[in-house]
Length: 225
View (cartoon, helix red, strand yellow):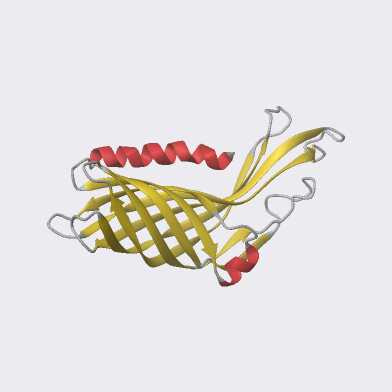
């Protein structure tokens, strides 16, 4: 639920960037991402993180190189449960809460295409950015007895390299975009929960720490401006 609230501001932010840079050599991407955690990160995450991202890329004139940025959000745990408002001072009063563990991702991106113009165009991609982990808990139905809460845990810095390809639709500004990127992430703190246990667990509970290495699979639509 809260993850969805990030989608509109992310979209508006990147749209504003795209309009400022609106030229024939600028493109805008809307992507679905599925991450495959590696090593310790894989042991601590019980579900593959999935989410969406938006990116803006600007082609360097007279070259096959493009630079830009990407911003996204992904979720790797959610649960809905009955919660007793004991800590809020209302024992024996229950409400339904929804909880998520998520992360925000942001990166500077460089791509090098095999061809300047081609219907099927492979490319190499390098990136550098960060991942900020957070958890949120909110009432399913609005309640004056409970304040929705969000807690940030830690941030890791990531460097990634991978490859992808675009399939361009002839005579249209649209193309399909597929990529797989291997990311090396620094050590940080995040939350690892398998069951909320009736609301007995706080947002600060269940914290673990490790490197955040992962492989990200991306599928998207690209709009050439």
